[in-house]
Image (cartoon, rainbow, N blue to C red):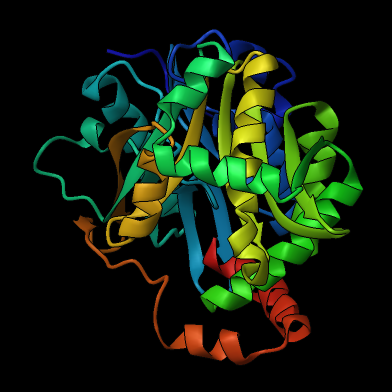
Length: 342
């Protein structure tokens, strides 16, 4: 049996990250910096459940449009409960369900950690996850890359593409300009600029992240955002100028980031989630020499008191709408909608 389950707000625990780093299974998203970004940008409230050495991280999303619910954690690819076994998780989840019912949550969603629910519990959504081992000399890291990736890196270098690693706000602005273009191409609105301002404030400025920006001929052609904590890094966002894709700036950005992170002491780089149907992105990550796993989400409907299965709503009629919108209007839409999507 676990000790008494407590519901806490990590933002009120000054030593939260110190305690977290003592665990073998933490990720960047379990840390306080990400919670600060979400709380300050969208007004989400942390509602984490702890007992002894176990943690179920949750944030309450309160939306007049999509309802009130508990998510672990909003806008993350993978943020599994930190528990030793299914029994230790069970009491945490039961406490979260009781709390959620009092708060009139529609559901609880765990992004990762399906193993704690048992084999009979269905995944609500599933993705591929990929990660890179950075503990090796640079020449060995380069050798692990597929030949096509190495050729792309050489092409970018031969074309005069350069990469700058920065934790400054101008680099974040460069990334955001490319992000708006990329999201339009995908038929999705960009997150609000305030979100990236808070990433700069709580993550980059605290030496917990950086931006890698590729330039060519005075133009920014590709950029990516990375976070890191306790030797573990994650590739969180990437964007590029599609018209300059032939210069292979995104490949050089990734390679430069791998080098920089390894020199900074990162031992692992997680590449985020990939939709099961996105074979192109999956192949790109595997070609970097990444190992592959399954990321499975679990969603529990508190009103029906059962686990539910759903489809990934990333594609649909809305993609055509956002592709047609000017970037300026898409930014307005993103500012209005992201809090409700979570």
